[in-house]
Image 1 (spheres, rainbow, N blue to C red):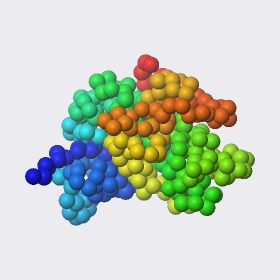
Image 2: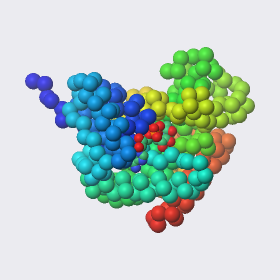
Image 3: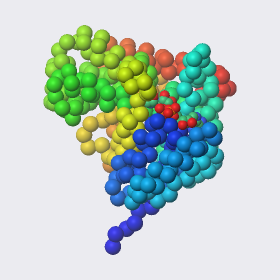
Image 4: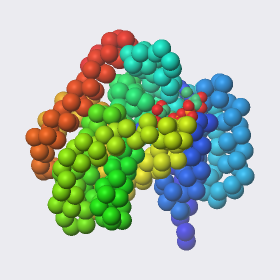
Length: 333
Ligand code: NAX
């Protein structure tokens, strides 16, 4: 007899936005949780987005996805996060002209306090939260602090897009297929200060630095290209990365629910001081998932002095973001 699986309930905020439009159809098609796993979608928008959201839900209906069991459309967080297994926090307020970075941290901070509280009160205790909306590391930390009943280990922010971008850059430079590139962790903040560690990266079985011997290119072209890729896409497309960001959300969640067989991946998690990172920030680290589905930070990587310096700078930025946002929101460490 075939056992019917219960649906996994996934909340997505900013569901009518660009990333939402590229993401929902992939979740409903089975790309995130597999081809035999039913899913229910709780789509969350702010009031002005509800009309567009209705259209997105109509299109989901029109796909007749066999795995999609239910669509909830709401601007009420207590409805949206009710009994969810996953909360994908994509929506956030974009930086507008004349807005300082500190203003953005404060405005979005308030949103993520509210969402954290609503997750705390309504989601399953086992809920896992992935923050995409920027500044995603600090937003994630704020949501985590606002959800004291949910273990800190269940909060993540996304740097997988940066990892995927970095792998492709190296593959193209080396003239190999992207699947040949492994062991590439992006460390630190999801911001231009992130550090894609090419020293521990492999291309095929060789060290990346043995295949691409031009270290100046790696430091001065590759690293900034990855850090500025989001801006380059806006310049070219007139809109920010959406399909590739949605793809990275799918990759992040799929690899968090699947025991790691080969390569580790970059995920922002709560730091406990691994590799000298400051404790208590959400920072990008190399992550593996064990046979029972528990994630852990990969141990034993050797970081060069240059890498340590770059990672420290990015983590400094996170400490500063935390200071500014927590100050504005009245949160304590
Ligand atoms: P859009 O502006 O297209 O969509 C955002 C949607 O969120 C809108 O429909 C808006 O109504 C909704 N929204 C705003 N505040 C909300 C709230 N409090 N609750 C629920 N919904 C809310 O942006 P999009 O291109 O989809 O990008 C979404 C976020 O992802 C942005 O913050 C963006 O900076 C961030 N990104 C993060 C990336 C990462 O790697 N971590 C990469 C891609 C992207 O830049």
